[in-house]
Length: 115
Length: 108
Image (tube, rainbow over all chains, first blue to last red; front, side, top):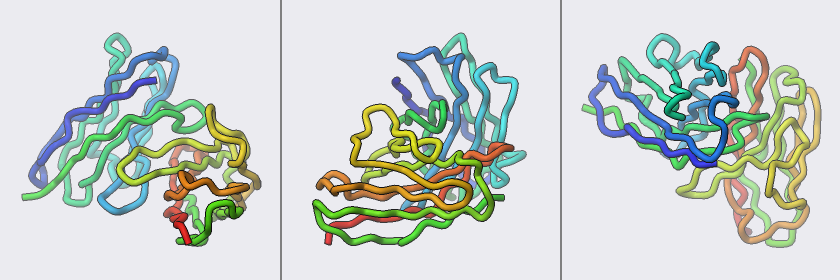
């Protein structure tokens, strides 16, 4: 399993960013996928999950209405559209493959929200 | 929302010792409890899923137990590479996959 996140960077409060996660070496469309984040020096926080088909999506209360998870199974890619970003969204964002739990993780991409 | 409380916050032990880490849920999680290990600068790694099942490639010294609201991760004999932060996580339905706050396992 190979997961590579990209799209992180510095953004101003209120701004937007789209993260991508390129997946390989497994049948991408067969698995649900999630985004999990970790603020600097803090613990893990589950952000969002999407079913294998993309028909079902779920969000943590902290991002509901601001973030949108999606996937393109033809491109083996997972996305996280983040709008109206706040300082407390600053974190490393990991994509994960979900079987029984988050069984595989990418290396993460850093999102910094600051003026 | 289900809250997971891990104890202790920090555990100081020596290589060869037995480690026992606890995770308590505010309500039953129906055994949908996982344990992860995270080392500095690395992504977390799945150790145990569904309370007691070892993930692929995880050494037999790691074991999980418990049910309902009380769960334990046991490392039978600590190796130097086991010193890290450990998180529990529940995946109750609807899927709000909350994590515990973590236990830091440090060398004594």
